[in-house]
Length: 212
Length: 216
Image (cartoon, rainbow over all chains, first blue to last red; front, side, top):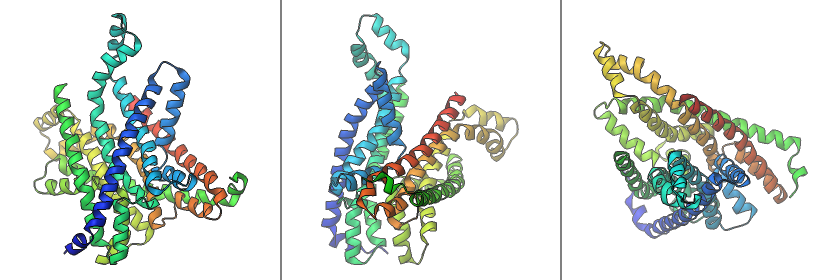
């Protein structure tokens, strides 16, 4: 049976880690959304060098492990674990977000842009008023999934002493000499975050699929 | 930064040896995950009573946990209940548990994407449910599943790096050993390690893209 005294006696440490995991995920979410939108715009803007740059960024970052990016900031630039991890999460996730947004924009039929342009809107206006509102619907479920991944990936902070939930689990287990029970509670804290998110994304997916 | 010092033939050989372990561990794990995930996906698709609910619960739990936690747990926590695994088996077990859950969802949604009429037509032409599943639904679904399975393999190749926490002698770990000798090697080695992952994963993603284009 699980020893619940481990949870109750170390609750402050669990909660501190939990809080840092949430903070780091939220900061990384917001910054990777901004960065992801910028990169997506670079990739679809009618300017060739920007396209190349955006593509190079997405393809490179997507295809290397998050851990390598984290090590680069932590060991290379000597940032603290929390900052290095959050920054790496932002960079890594932004490439997936950029890809999801680009796919959403490209899935809007071409005729929409042509019709908007020929009715007198500029490229920017057509994008903002006609294409993007339609793309948002398609983009929301994959963005939700990216957020779930982001929360799970934030455990990478533990590898660089980033003060997150996993890291505090590590501290508690080296204090109590118990591993199994300590990490079952760590897992429970992660599930408190990710399960509702998963259900939320599943619900949105169903609703948006119905409205089409 | 000392590129020449970092890229000696010995170091390059050492990194390639690490990469070989990465590829082997990822390959064994994806094969095992395909088998387990396939069974789970089919059971859930067929809505086998009780069993499919239990599996749904397990899949949702595993999918929503960080892989790092699963790796850590497999190697450090399981010995407390007398399941002691060596490093390489522990890494393979952890990656397989996580990846089976992911692949079971890929396989289930692949099966679900086949038009219902196919099953109805097969059943009304006299095939049993199992026969219809094996001969009609699965072959069509498998073709659609190939691109997402390749993407999962790419994730798996990247995720293998997380096993540095249990000192699996793979690429990232071998990189750590080299730059552990001197801070001057850090950036050159990180760049090279990143490029090695990139080359293999990018090539695989091009294959997945080509397969996807062929399908549509």
